[in-house]
Picture 1 (cartoon, rainbow, N blue to C red):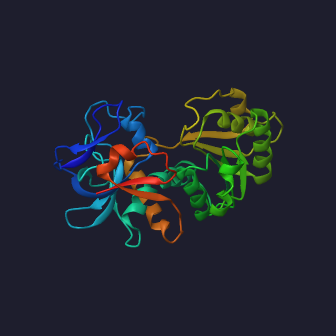
Picture 2 (picture 1 turned 30 degrees about the horizontal axis):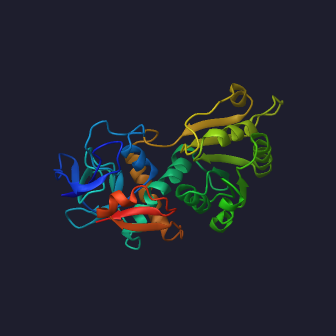
Picture 3 (picture 1 turned 135 degrees about the vertical axis):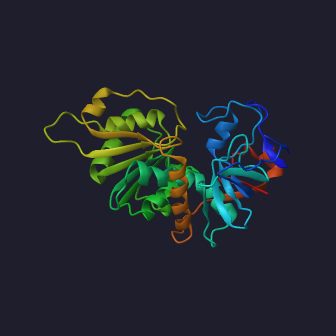
Length: 319
């Protein structure tokens, strides 16, 4: 069959031939129609992600849209290695697909699934978000962050605060639902004070962090208390991505003096079955919630050329 194939962690995937999968007990074959290119998939294909396969060659792709043998159109996730989603056929566990709403097209579904899942699961499963709470999204200018603003509002956030690299990058975020925006191109001291003021005045309950690195240090410093007699408010800080750094310096005093709870959301923090269930719920919200994502459909045969594209749109490979 035709597929994108990772032959080396040092090269982009190539379009070529790969053996067809055969379904084992408890599995189903999926005829793939669309598969999204996410930072997770790029990281796995380069051997940089903690879930990367050590065995070459393999087909990249963690999820997609396709049809089962009986014709049902489904979203599916977590194909059995080495059969990723970027191929004519793949194979998944019977518990790892969900039916798609008729009004949601293949490309939009494939584009929105991974970035939408990142905040939908972080809010519902990890933070146990409650409608009426305030959410701060650190790194809201990317595909995932922009969807996170819309999802937080859809789920009932009272207020959403969004951050981005500079004033220009955050300029259009209010049109997506952000009530306040913060540019990150300030000194650490200035940024900490801006965060502290916003957190106190807005009563932030949940932080979704797509960046980590220096801005996360400023956020945590802003949350830290000063040992007053009153308990500091509870804030659930959910770490989702590490665009600007893999590590931070964490003061023990920041944890002891605040109501800060550090959590992570990603592969392994919840089960695959729960992830797929949540994505199914998210998919039902895309059309009625008018959730927006910019997607660019590209034939899978052009995988090598499109893999390193700098477009802000979510690339979706189609078959």
